[in-house]
Amino acid sequence: MSTALSSSSAALLIEPDPDLAQAFRELIVLAYHSSVTLDVVLSLKEGLTYLQAHHVPVILIDLSLSDDAGRDAVECVRETAASSAIIGFHRTTDTTKLSDAIRAGAHEVLPVIPPSAETLRLSITSALIRVACPRTVTKPVPSADAHRTLSLPLMKVAHDLNNCLTSINGFADILLARLSAEDPSQYCAEQIKLACTRAESLIKQLPQITCTPHTPQLSTPTNNAPGT
Image (tube, rainbow, N blue to C red; front, side, top):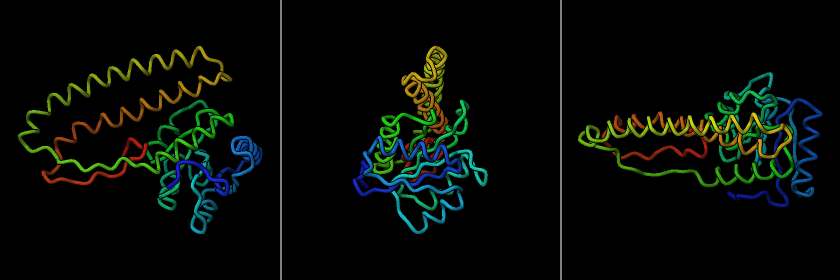
């Protein structure tokens, strides 16, 4: 899969608000100079029907849809369009839905709506890279002996990493409190907090590594979703 939108690409926006949909149309034009078509549907149901008949490399989805919202909406879209890059967005300062979207398999999220044209283009590029390069790795599972020797160190590593993430989150909160809503650095600080959320989910999996059956297994492609 390409990691950039071509001159003949189409993207899908699932958004019931006509004003916000128009804002995204204008941003796409600014970001890609009219070379990318943005199709708009008003509900998740319409979006799933559209995706059954069309393939699009990028899907932008409002995480506050009335028929299905947040994590459930992202999961439905992923099941229908597994090879498409999914970008979720939410129009409040609450980042819970953004974090849930990442856990459900979204490849990117937009913490500020509407974003700038540059931010939108960067998010689309990042999402395309993640869906094109899933992290699928074959690794042998530790034996029972390895479990006894690695269990305690892994728990200590998880504890130390959690402490580091707590510090990073704290500094990110300080930055967010000092930055104005219009400051482009807001996006970077939000991304730091989301990265910490992903890392925290991965840390929770560390103890499970030593409790897996003793046969080598192929791990599930994780893309950018920490819950997989």
